[in-house]
Image 1: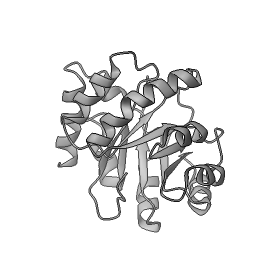
Image 2: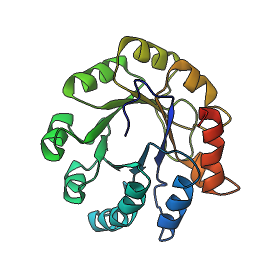
Image 3: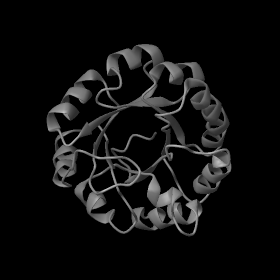
Length: 211
C-alpha cells in the first residue's frame, strides 16, 4: 500500500463477506480495470481454513498487479500467509501485537469510526493508516457510526499518516470525500455489485480519482 503523502486519492478494495469460488477471477478482472492500491480480504464469518484457502488463491493475483494484500482482523493468519498487512477493527486486535507478529514492513490499518481520539491513539501505537466511516449507508456491513467528511480534512491537515474513507462509497458520492482529503477510498459493494461487473466498477472510480 503506497504512502499517500504525495499521491492522489487511491482505491482500496474490500472483498464481499462471502467471496465465492469464482472470486479469484472476479478480483483479477477488477484489478485489471484500473489502479488499485490495496485489497482487503474480509471473511469474518468463515473458519480459518476457508480464509487461508481463499487468501492463497488471491495473493498471487494481487502481487502480479502491485496491489497490497491486507487481511481483515487476523494478524496471526496474516503472518502465516506472509500477507502485506492486516486491518484491525476496534475490538479485533492490538496494533502492537500485530506489529510484533508481522514485522516493521507490514501495513497495519486501524478502524477509527468517527473518533479523532481513536485515530490519534492508533497513530501513536504505530498504525500505518487510519480508517474513518461509515460516511454513507451501506448494505455490505451494518454501520453504527456515521462520519462527516470534515474529519478527513482535520486529519489530513494535522497528520502525515494516510486516512481511509469507508462506508457506502460509490462513484456517485465519492467526490466530497476526495475533496475533503481522503488518501484512500475503501470500496466493496460499488464494485462487486456493479450492474456491469466489477471491471466497470473499478473503471468508474478511476475516472473520479483521475487515474
